[in-house]
Length: 180
Image (cartoon, rainbow, N blue to C red; front, side, top):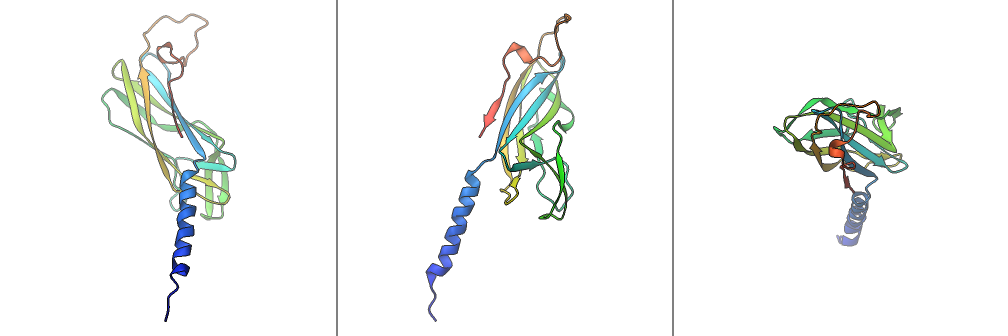
């Protein structure tokens, strides 16, 4: 019996090309920044800009469904986290035929915040965000992006009537890192 090697190798080659193309396409772009809350606290802001037709999932999903968005932080004595990462965007919720359960996700833009307390005048908050991007037709493998956000304490000063809370740290423009 003669084996046709082409018939065995061709499907593997096609699958390899499809997997490589899926890995190259990145429908989610992340931006990271810090905003002062008061003299000792700041919000780290995680913004996901999601291409049309794609979505990422909320943080809290039931087991048996897609991979939720998760945040992990490197240990540091220079700050402490206050509470957990919070969703600031309103998710859509629909019954997903693939997972046979209701699932919540974000389209276009997803904003998450983590409040921190500064234990010294400046710090760099580092960590990773893991997420899975899906469209109506496919899901990409879960992806992990590292983040690094510089945060500097603002000197305490008396507020005048025209100062607003939420001003940026150290008077500089928005500190952010863009990962593509």
